[in-house]
Length: 218
Ligand SMILES: C[S@@+](CC[C@H](N)C(=O)[O-])C[C@H]1O[C@@H](n2cnc3c(N)ncnc32)[C@H](O)[C@@H]1O
Image (cartoon, rainbow, N blue to C red; front, side):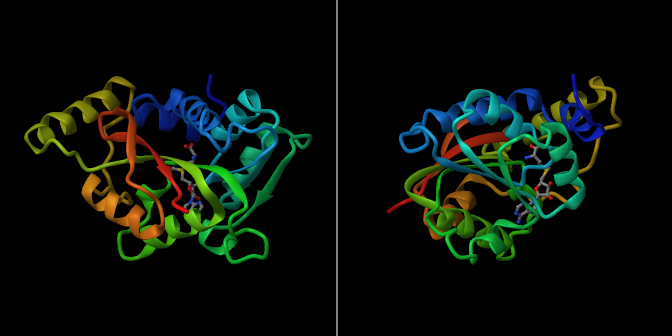
């Protein structure tokens, strides 16, 4: 069951959306640094709270910081989680947060689900990834989930048609990619390396939506 119009739409557009938060949290919880008890974890671009709910269910010991620049998204997430939730709420981008005292090197792990894709590749993606890397302890991991350009050019048309078909079968008129800025794996690798991460390791994929583990280099 979906708690909001936003989540219902996401599950009609994004194959596997209902599993993304669960999978992402499970991956981070198994990482060498974030598997320790009581560590601090950042949910960057928390939206309406899917990853937060899952993190609280799987790892109630984690101390969570949830940030999103959108007041509406944060309000909906707070309503869903309830005021008793022990989450630090921040209306902010990661890029602004990292310059605050005590934020650099603070977090044992981070989640960024469907955020990077909305930033243009004009320095904005690099600024976001650099800020995430700076917030993490050396060796800590980021789970990054994003819409990617295909690395299989010969299947590009088929994958695009399949995505449109998925959306129609989910009851939507197929949507455009307006406002989305997907990049390919080579460009992602170059950006994350420049930001201070090792090479991205792809750990799951559904059509163009791919999940990666990134480790902050020391
Ligand atoms: C497509 S939503 C994804 C929300 C949630 N992670 C999910 O999977 O349902 C992207 C969110 O990222 C937020 N966002 C955009 N730029 C950001 C930034 N620079 N730092 C943190 N959050 C950002 C947006 O406000 C939006 O709520």
